[in-house]
Image (tube, helix red, strand yellow):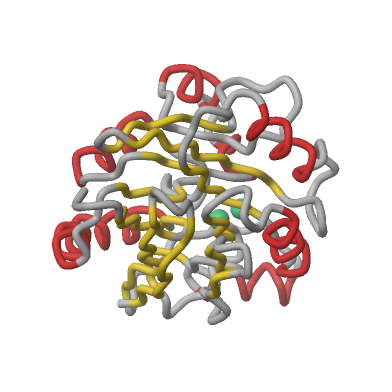
Length: 260
Ligand SMILES: [Fe+2]
Ligand SMILES: [Fe+2]
């Protein structure tokens, strides 16, 4: 990290092996071009669309990923509890009550202590603990000593995501949405200095239905038959944002989409 500026890369949900391959091919150059100090990816769909495995966690780490957030699909893998307990840098949403693992972590980048929080939305999702209260408690207790706090709000509704962003504008430095697998074009720096985007998008085959091959999804929708879904490969992209944070002022200086 040079001076007071920290460069952070955040990438949307990795969809199966096509998404992992995209990171393998493109991550080194993205990191180099943007002088990235910290890389955070959402890994809830990394195992062929559902969950994550020990092997994939090691793969992502070897590519230069620092922290892996997740969401509702983290529990798709039967080993999820064991993995969450094993790796501090693998997060599940913090507002799941009494679950394995943690919904936050702390990481030291240079001399800067950074807190990273993962939350799940409740609009059109499942009735978990309140994400607002969960984040409030975390920043006032466990993450109190962190100089910067970054949130992955894994949620369906842009309304809920933006509401959380305004509620914590100036209290945390960055709130990014994940889960829809569709990159939004609403990146912004809020009045209090918090960077925000409703959804980072996804890493994988864009010529797809939110990352999955079209045929399986169409069969399910048209015939109401459960068929296996497979991650798509066509038009592979890495989507997310590069964010510059001012460590002293505790503000986002810039937030720019990546889509390529
Ligand atoms: Fe996802
Ligand atoms: Fe999700």
